[in-house]
Image (cartoon, rainbow, N blue to C red; front, side, top):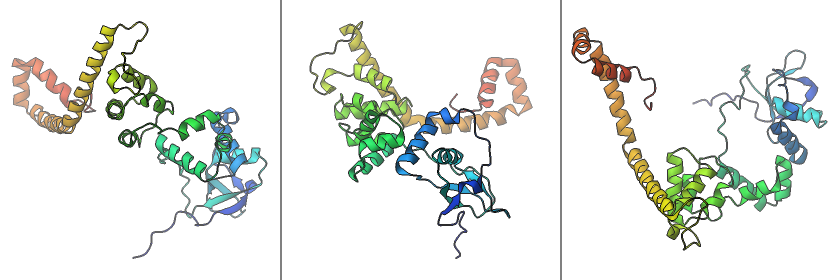
Amino acid sequence: MSNPPLGFIPEPLFLSLAAVLPSRKTPEGLLASRKFKQITASIDTVGLIEPLSVGRPDRAGQYILLDGHTRLVALKQLGFDKAPCLVATDDESYTFNNRVNRLSSIQEHVMIRRAVERGVTPEKLAKALDVDISHIIKKLNLLDGICPEAAELLRDQTFSPNLGAVLRKLKPTRQVECVELMVSANNITVAYAQALVAATPSNLLVGETKPKKITGVSAEQMAKMEREMGNLQEQFKLAEQTYSQDILNLVLTKGYLAKLMANEAILRHLTKHHPDVLNEFGNIVRMVALDK
């Protein structure tokens, strides 16, 4: 069985930047954008990590740039005259990063920790990424005090580095409960985590044995908030357990009603005797998304 053809020449070629022609115009405001400044700082500190992607040369020896327009501008700004380029074996001018999955917060944490373990200082990482060193430290210590079960639930999520500081206030069992609730609600934010901490009984907080006092909230209101948050969590768990079956039932029901309403005799009967039912059936059949 023959191997599939490669999309690129395996080894990058060092090409003159003068021979690389952009395939689109540089957007306005690029040089002042934060992303451009980060890329420039990264190239200046550690060099170009991802080669440019170019098409095959034309008769004049010019290469059309397929991917890496921002990197090309940054390289020219920094005074580079050559750069490593991956040469495509076809003529497809597709943006190759269009379908790239972005790193989750925990993947970033692992990469930063691995870099530090290999001798890269947090200061150098901060300079390479053009961020404050405190941001690197927060990502470096992202999972400190977070139980493995909660970390596993957050593995594929993107969230603020400040979330860890909030979750550390909770005991492991409560961490898992709160993360499950945040993931279920698709609301993995610091503000939501702080609300969950505020509604957590004192016996599930790290180092706290007395009821918490929050300005403007009485002890009775806090107790009510804790009960309602517990009820909400239980409702989410019940909804998750039946969600797949409910969607399947709804798909089957929608298909059945569509065929039912295509019958003229049934349609006349419903129009004459049950107009309200007919209206509800019509709403179900016309649904575009099943979660609406």
